[in-house]
Image (cartoon, rainbow, N blue to C red; front, top):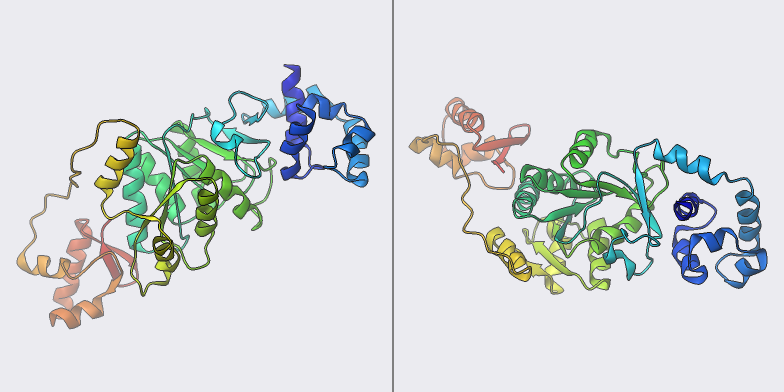
Length: 365
């Protein structure tokens, strides 16, 4: 029990930079030795300067180990450090290893895990791909890992939950800070379904921009594969991909239109040698084969059993995964506006198309 008190002290210590904590443990062997180290021993480590050491020593004199830990326990959150056997093996050998992280929920084993990352302002096509891939992965026992950001991240999590799978959100804020706010329900569902919310940042930490690139190394490290679904030329998703490459992970991409700015970054990864997901069933089966597990049969989507008229089918076939306006469809069909509008509304009502913004529709995900 005493060991965990010192680990929590080092976890909570804000006078030591995140990147120095693991290095201090490597030098002193454990947090207990760090807590009891003398000024000269701390300086000899060359990990802290004299000013940092003075602050470090002065503050630890006033730290109430048991009291601070008891207060944390009451929050319902947990933490794990590199000194603990529950610490994920996948994190132990990466560059800039996190000393530990806070988490909510029962900690998963990360044995079969795939990251889904991509654009925050994604297209209807990107949404469809993230939802469907997340669902397929969840159905086949994979853990989906992402950052719970708007767009692709959130849809990847949501798809996994729809497939009755476990998903893990790695935050760029404190574990107790839900960002963006509209993902509160998603946050709660992730935990209820047996997944985790995790963060290396202190409880209460705000989601400032500099936190997100750093957290991406954890997203990639905990994953066996990283899938990028839509990414602009300069994108946080590409940072995750860079971390994945450094960590020896395979990267896959869902290709997009050459003319679409949302696809520039993703298509560039393909040019650099990333794997291409051209069929979800094939991708899932390749993953299952790597784990020596039984492959799935061809997935059949359950469409609503609504028989479309010839005119409805004609209009439906003009839509795809990219938004198209009613005015464009009128030009293509030469159909009367009110008649076309009636057909479009019937297709939407029966779940065949979705209005993604005013008078612009895509085929339903």
